Length: 154
Image (cartoon, rainbow, N blue to C red; front, side, top):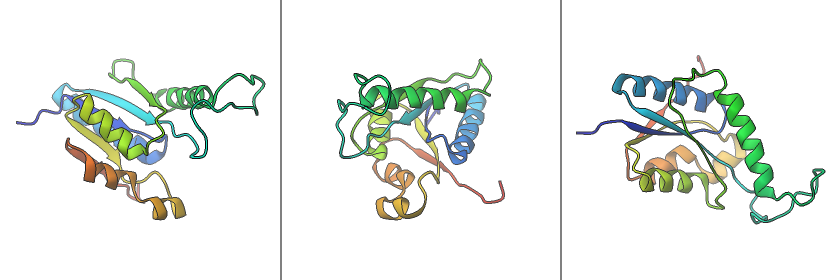
């Protein structure tokens, strides 16, 4: 029998990922489970992780350093209103892989019981050209994926 004791919630800091997180927290509360919140920090494709960020006053700081700081600040703001007793863990990945691949790799390698994610994140042309991250996760994950649909009435 499947027990949802460990739930991975990939987020992109959008309202859609917040809806999925709220749903996962409710589910985890019912089964006394633990939620792990993960954000995949993507590098712009033409740049390597050791690329320097020259637009900031610290020229020796790498793109990875910059992206990690931005992701941590966004994560703190995103999770800021949650109660301290909620069990969450921050995982920031800087892999040059696609977010769906990183999400499924983490879920499979770290033994998560399920992934809970929203249906929206990327929008417009980028979504049409690259496809849905949720769709790719559903197709490639070895663990169950619960997709929380977005409703325009929410």
